[in-house]
Structure formats: C-alpha cells, structure tokens
Image 1 (cartoon, rainbow, N blue to C red):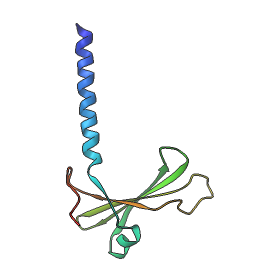
Image 2 (tube, rainbow, N blue to C red):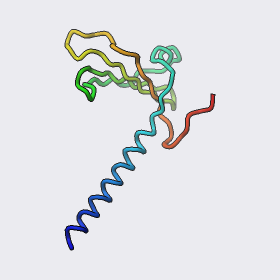
Image 3 (cartoon, rainbow, N blue to C red):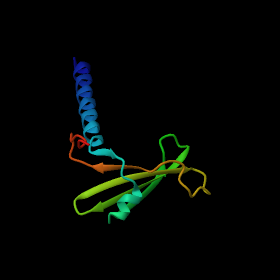
Image 4 (tube, helix red, strand yellow):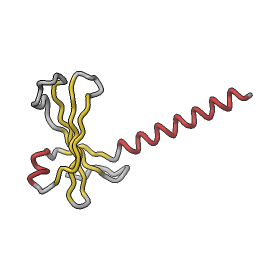
Length: 106
C-alpha cells in the first residue's frame, strides 16, 4: 500500500519538474540578431561564462547583454583544446521573452 503512494508521489514530482523545465526553456527565443549587431545597438555585455558543451568536444562562452529592459544571451563555441581562441561555429543569440510568448510576425 505504501509503495504505490510513493511511486505516485515521485511521478507527480517528475511531472512538475518537466513542466518547470519547459517553462524556463521557453523564456529564451532564438533571434537572427548577431552579437555584433547587439554591440552596435548599444547593448552592454553584463556577464560572460565559459564551460564545455554537453558533448564535451568543445568549449562554449555565453555572453549576456542588456540595454534597459531588453536582455539577450549569445553562445560562441570553440575547440576544447587550450590553444583554441577562435570560434568554431556561428554565434547563436536568444532574446529573453515572457514565458509562452510567440515570435513577432514578420
């Protein structure tokens, strides 16, 4: 009797965790705006973090930029070896949006 109650509780917690993960992931919307464009439009880099990508094959820098109430984050990947200073792919930028917001019509 106690085991099914524990299993049900764990299932409920898992569902809540997944719902929360989906909600937070939807707050960042991909944008065609480049890091260069953001800097040219007077956005300020407020933080930079570095770490390895999920695959572990490359390192990734994350730039957070802000201008008034607008926030972007941009990812730049590079080879994981210590000598690699140049990006290996395109920089991807995401804009912080209200959860569940849809992309603006073009």
